[in-house]
Length: 552
Image (cartoon, rainbow, N blue to C red; front, top):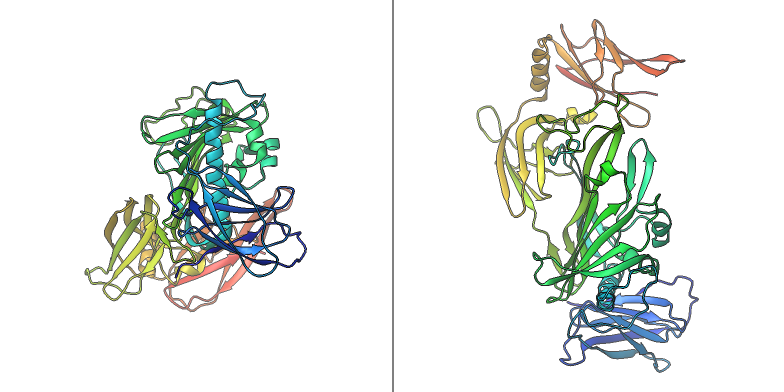
């Protein structure tokens, strides 16, 4: 059953007062049809927002009316903004019938005050009219996520490239589920962006990039600092762009230059494209930029369904020699000789995979799927095998037929691994030969061979020329702060070596298990204090023993 969205209080300092129920409908002034997705904002005598909400697909809104409310403001993209004076009787319920007038064109010029920092342009009045409409759409987006948040499944990804090439080195995906009011939100306020810019230098080439969200774009600080003009693109036949650029540039401040695209036929927000200005020349040539896309659900609610940032970082090259920025053969630095910096590209962002609102409305993104068949050496199905996509939260367990399905795959490359219960104790997975690239609205099918963990580790012993007939100890050295220790020296009887980059080590031992042993780990502390010795007793009880070495 459909129900109206409650108005959410946004002014927490208001004292408790007698309130009455406020119930109403927003309709088209001509057709009398309901208007969904209209922001309904309650204002006090000084024009401050007391509460705001959103009309549902029946044009209905509901909430509590406080005596301090004097006006109701209606905002909806494609309609003229409207303020209605409140004059409700004391006591009992109050119902409003509010109407909005549809505008014939989103580019209807309006009278406005010209920003003195911006060059005078012939399209300024038209651009500002489009900005007012865009602002109405953005406010509706904010009101909807506050008043009627969806239960969502959100995919957050990070894709480092092979330095400056377009090839992805690894794809990491984290899955977050829950009631999201702001799946994408700027990390700092508009005032802080105005003061500090959109990129924070952390030192040694590390940077924190920030992107604009709907809340930032509607702030007066943003409007005062940027100049607006109209933009067009032949590939966007029914869309018109509102270009924004900083009115004044500051040498030490990284800014953004972008375009908000609006569909003038469907009268809805489409997306925002922007790029970063003010970084070093090497970074700017690699196109640091971002993208934010809007989606309108069937109940009239507009939300941000995906967002991305292309960020540029660098390592300091102490050799100061000309270098290849991409480690892949045949890909040379097109930026000229190195100036002591090795650049890296990383794509990051997120996408809403699924969403469901309290009124029963659902939405699902077009994503990929993986169907896997787990088999043994004789091609017989193997059940209860947990399969995971490396560096992600995607996983599933095979059924009695050896089949499993993983859904909602963000597009990109993946490697399939097996999560073995023995190896999971130290966070190690079993590699498979299955790799694939997920695509939207597509299902990739493949099979993987399931082997015993001890056999897999024994193969590694044989591959490196060590004894595999006795028993094996696979370990991982972890520091106090939970990081894997690279290069720590270890020794078990006559076997010795150093841990790999992921903190792992493998001792391939001769003889029988069951004898108490000691794992001796030496870790460098600093030049003055030298190394510290840690001794861990262990008694192997089977062919493969897994040990986690936690350093104190």
